Image 1: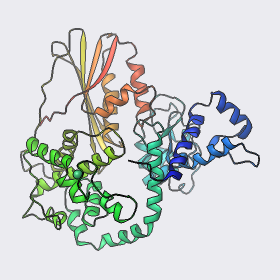
Image 2 (image 1 turned 180 degrees about the horizontal axis):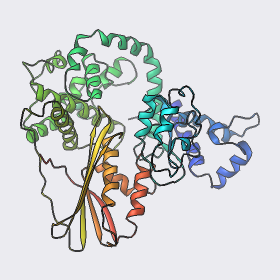
Image 3 (image 1 turned 120 degrees about the horizontal axis):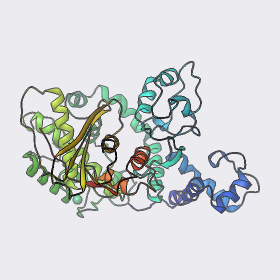
Image 4 (image 1 turned 180 degrees about the vertical axis):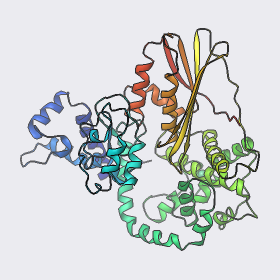
Length: 476
Ligand SMILES: [Zn+2]
């Protein structure tokens, strides 16, 4: 993505100064500025003074974007205000909607158990509305570390100018389209397509996505071009003249590879589609069976997301990984809704390999259901002869994402390593994100930081410990 608006780019650049100030409070520059401009408070609460230096005014200008993207990662909860700080990833504005009547808590530590290892259910009930307390339960807790600031625009939790620019640009675009979105909301309830979509067995976010596709509310380049946000409406991947939603999801090079791979892996084929009616045709039983429809719509969703990730400079998702997600999401939902039909499910296998002599292998897996925000962990340890050492599985009643479920599985898994073992331990996970965040755990401030810190303490005595990404296998 280019930086088209120099004003926003400038704010995003200045935001970096403020980020340094907050994350490196011991630096000389930070101490000087604090002494001068906010000796008794913190940076976010400081104000512009009459005789402020140019530098300070610039840093304050960049604070605007920090206010939009910063989030607290909860450790001991001592420095986070429940009502005024941003700290709940799944809540609107990352804050509770409002205190429940009779609420008495002020700091997040008031919502924790005394040992800080779990949420205090009673305190959550007393102080927060149900929607907020549910979101809070999905925040993982670990050891009693200090709360730290993180950046919500990137998975690793560190500030980047690129993601800051994106947040600013999205906000501008949102404000511009606020009116249009309002009217689309009330439209949805009387919409026959929405009613039809309601019965499709896919996660809710996929349903909403497809509803937006059918109404062409998708920010494809061609649409942005028509709205004068993008200068050009062409496809950046294959050079086609117009990147319509139809193009991006069915015709483009990446889409082609994707649908080819899907067919190869699952036997499901994207039906021949007409650019004018394709969004409705996919909801038509005569054109697309119920079973295929779920996987195809989930496929469309993950295809669109991986297209966005590429545009926003994140590591591109491999088509295969995106497909596995799509198949996974549908297999789980279909299982949940009609486990008795005995329909054959797509299956993929990878051979398990024994670890070298003197090593243990820990295989972990996290399951996640987006509809109920629940999940499960599974972990099994085997030795170099392939013999079983230990295994555990646990249901997760509140979990925020697949990544979080995988991280919980890792935490459960390392606790299985028998006491006194000082061998090499190799972990295999099907989450490349988890493997990546483990490697960057020291610098990163991700949502799973608290969990990774705890894992690190547990494995400290081993002669080596590594987390490797391995392809998913289905055991059905
Ligand atoms: Zn293209």
